Length: 203
Ligand code: GAR
Image (cartoon, rainbow, N blue to C red; front, side, top):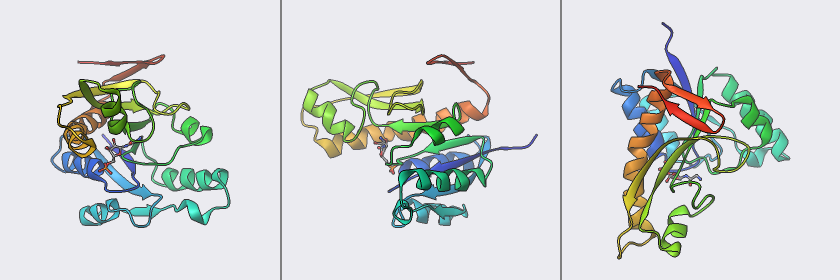
């Protein structure tokens, strides 16, 4: 059977991208990484892709006159690799309706909070400021509303009295590196059923 393919979109450090690459290389994820696409020519994720021999496309939003044209170029870049799944791994740009429609049900994002709590930027800081006792991460399908799509996997961590934003972010990141590869694996194993906004995982 032909192996499934995914494309990763990342804007920065790319540690989630690396975790997914590592778990692909060791056979845990039964698919191949077709490309990294980034909006940031300075993204550290680019070096990770190069080290792994993964093709890189830079679609720099600054090169386009408006969001519509930027997103058209992004759709073209992604579609060139015919991916079964599009993975947003620290992709820090809000996507418009057209691209979300194009990859509906096959685009995943990770967010460093237990959604629907603390969507948007600085989720870990929001959790600390609110004073929650648990925090965590969420992998979800991408829909038109930001950080509001059907939840695939969530993992929790305690919030400690002496946490600052960095220590909490680091504890959550460790869980992200488990939750994201697991979600990608479930997708390629055909074990995710989406019904309305509910995700069921087949055993
Ligand atoms: C991760 O913590 C991810 O959850 C977050 O950005 C970080 C990227 O790290 N994403 C968002 O906040 C999206 N709203 P990485 O580049 O090392 O994977």
